[in-house]
Amino acid sequence: MYKRFVWTSTISRVALSTLRPDSVQQAGLMNGLKSRAPGCTPRKFVNMKRMVVEAGHGGDGCVAFDRLFCNPKGGPSGGDGGNGGHIILQASQHVTDLSHLQSIVRGRDGINGYPSNCHGANAEHTYLQVPLGTDVYSLDDSTDSIENVSTSLAAGLLTSIGSLEEDAAFLIVARGGAGGKGNAFLTAAADAALTSRTRSDRNTPLRIAERGARGECHRLLLRMSRLAHLGLVGAPNAGKSTLLRRLTRARPKVAPYAFTTLKPHLGVLTVPTLPVQATNSSDSLVNDLQSGPMNYDITVADLPGIIHGAAEHNTGLGVEFLSLISDCRLLVYVVDIGTLWLTNNLSSISDWRPLLRDEVVELLATLKHELTVFDVQLGHPSRCLVVGTKLDLIFPTPTVSESDSRYQHILNALTEEVTAAARNAEVLSDDDNSSDRVVLISARRGDNVSTLIRRIQLWTQPLCVE
Image 1 (spheres, rainbow, N blue to C red):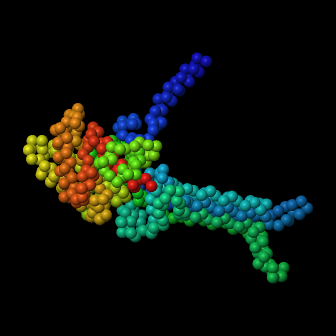
Image 2 (cartoon, rainbow, N blue to C red):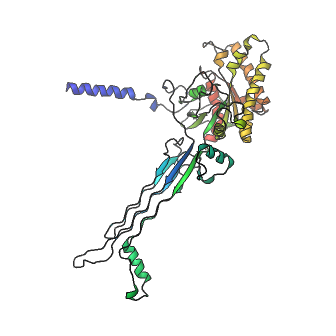
Image 3 (tube, rainbow, N blue to C red):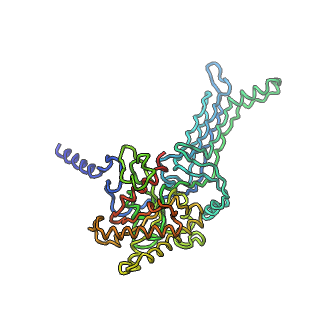
């Protein structure tokens, strides 16, 4: 009894150590509510997948004869084979990417027929869960390499099979083969066709049965057309990964060098639904958030950095990741304000506004140029928001109070200059509401992150809530 008690106690301690107490917390602003794992948790994200799908083959028909009591030659009794299973793609809102799919998918075969007129069972269909907005294309032998696939896709040379836009929508990409007929069916069919002939002319196929038909085999390309609600766009080492870690529970790698992010990372920000009238205003109702029972998710994507020449000369990570940006419904331009402040030593310059504005205009103009060269619709001001990062480099003291007059004065001046730079670079329009789409934060320390979440909440609710 003593040993059993000790063993049970040990198991209980292990079980308690693996429980997550945050799993029962009520949904709300997820920032700061849940404990996070240290370090980074790399996960391979796949938004484009080449695969071979082969449906199941039909079962073979059976050749058999009845041997009954007092009638050893009872006639043909071979059953039919079952049909092969289809390969079906089904859209699911709970699937985020295509990394779980195998490169080769084989359907189930139908069961062969049995004697005594017993038919083989039809095979079950194979369902593959894919994200919403998955486009399906047919590939031929000329698109073997991934470069040829990307080129053909960009040129519109691939044949589209279908698109899965709604939850639970399905698409049959390979049909299973039909089951073969047994000798009982073939004999009956032959007898019916030969009724007009004399008995001597008949040649009934007593010992003939059909083999099952082969299932369809296709080479497919699956591509996600909906990557995220928000896409973080910026130069390398601008603080996009740190911002994603602050907003969501995603853990992308963060390091002080360029191109730390080589693959997109996704995170989910859960926020409460605002009242209907709050979505028509920006500042007047920003503080009127109601954490009611209704919540919705905002998917945020951390994308690789963009440098000059990415669209025209495939510089950096090139066109492949510009196509990912086009799959985001809204864009967040991330600008490293803190590094510009330190590099140009703006704290020692009395009139630092023109210099900062010129630097920000150059950065935003480069980003907008690369996006518009790839796709003109990407640079539309209605889908853009500007976030200045690394305020902790400008205000390194962690104990600075937001009520400090000097802090508020510099913060307001920085916001005005970034807003003016965004308008000059044509990232934002010249209307009065464009200033509401500029937020300066410190993702590392958390300064103004709550304000950014509220702005994102007002901006994205019409898209995320049906």
